[in-house]
Length: 394
Image 1 (cartoon, rainbow, N blue to C red):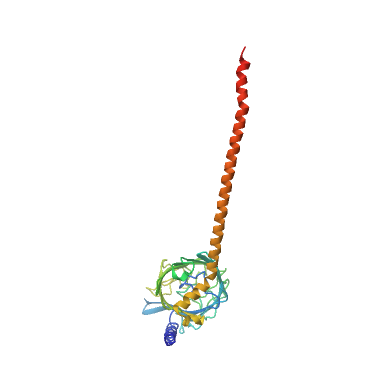
Image 2: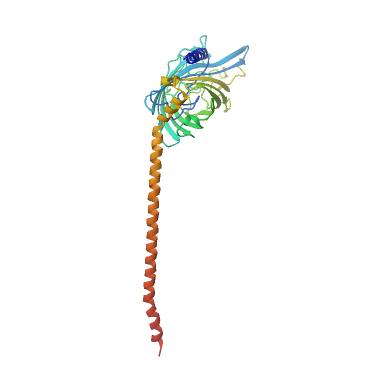
């Protein structure tokens, strides 16, 4: 218990320290990676907290040097209503905006996610799921530079998910692959994000975009090595004066240190693969950004996250043996399905053998019948051959 209290105290300090000045954008939490969601749910009665942070900063020059920060702090709560239904609450606590004297949103926007996952046969290594995400504009400022486009309205997104696990019974112990494909409606037709003369935005139609991502996990005893790619493609671009109206693609390698069964610490970094091609039309005809700074999205970002299992409480005091037994109990359905399929396979093989035997018997009967027919035909033809020569004699 002393070790657990000490660890929780350390985690709390990390969360309080980083949540005030680091960035997190729509992190997945649950059984997912930094960006990419897993099609598997966390299970009925499980509650996870995911404290995520990401930041970027760089000095630019105009007449004087200016530092721009892409800074945010957030957390996610994931709760399993059933073995296949999961709810997520994702509030952004702090968002740096690089605007005006305050230059920050406290709090920023709120995300709610409804996930149906772990779909598929128990004996399949592939699982599937769908997720509905809603974004509520709690923050005071929107369409923030270096951030994915936000309209300042209630937005809705849909994501399809597929996951592969090399180990069917214990999927987290072997190689995992996750694939996401989503669609976001920004609900911004006729919307104005700011009354400032410099960044007033008004869309004639609703902008929308396709999002995609894939991630891989290679687990070791105390570490998980991860690799992700995520990007977007605007189907209908935002207004020409909006920030972040370009398509992007990021590569995100990372590692996760498993302190305990119920506590993981993640580290990762983003590297932009798309060119820095600014498509914003500024009111005054020139870029408002100082030189030497990215004009679309950050070219790099650094991540840190803490994943904490809050429920069930047994995770804190169960031994390795107890955890193994508990895992085996949760896989009972998979075991039973495998046994059923094996029995069905054996029955099918026996039926197939019977069918083969019956087919062989039928072929033998056909062969015998064919020989009998050929023999009868020969007997009918022979008298005709002996009578013909006699008829030809004078």
